[in-house]
Length: 205
Image (cartoon, rainbow, N blue to C red; front, side):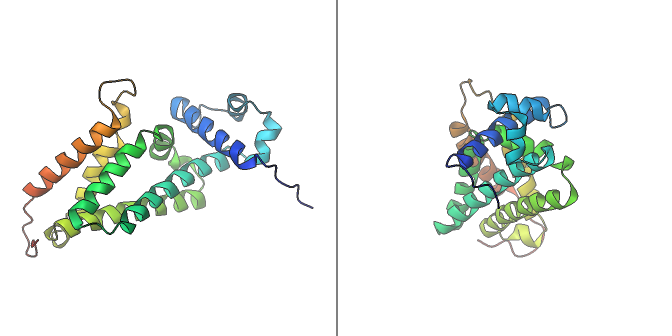
């Protein structure tokens, strides 16, 4: 008979995921041991293995939870049924703002997913592709000619280049905040998008 879960199981699991993400982000996946994760969470190593069978499972859970969260943001913005420009702008604002509270998880997602076993890595990457596709569709909706010119996906990657790497230089205690930078990123992207002149037909508002 399976051992029943305690009332605090989910809460403790979330603590483990958060602390492990911080350790992986700071020292790297291979530079962090399960002993260090257990110590940081204030649990024994056997107790840690009650939640995650090994370090691969822990990494997979961190990455999958973060990707699921990003997909949820995409769904929430879609549910608002905004106009085309407002929809894309809201996606940008929500993602940049969210990264302020999930910097460790985001660093793990961008740096350590390659260490996952094939099946787990594929699940995470499939989720990332769905998020990227949602942004690409939003860009094409604002400027249809980018689709026919094959530019909507490259433009999406340029946009993610701005958003994804804010954590490498934006200091948490600095004068600029993610809240302030979310508007800057959106304005910068929309300003640049207006200047794009696809060479194929179909660029109609």
